[in-house]
Amino acid sequence: METRSSIFNNVKNDRQFRSNTDLLKEEFKKLSERFVQFYKPKVYQVTENYTFERAIQDPSEGLFLVLCYKKISQLSMYLGFVLGFQIR
Image (cartoon, rainbow, N blue to C red):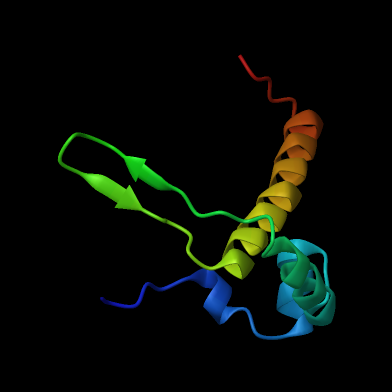
């Protein structure tokens, strides 16, 4: 099985963790340890012959993406408000 590349693997220091998740690296590690008990990867059946298995296998990567999305979505809503964009 080939190794997947991930942005999570490229985030190394506190500044990078903070800019993506609003947490320091140590804070992220502590939260990640608790997140493991709640994260259950799913297998998706796309068609009868094709199954999409566990897109995010690593619980830490899943947590990183959730926190990153939470931060980015707030920023995009703010910019939409400031720049006058409307959701239709």
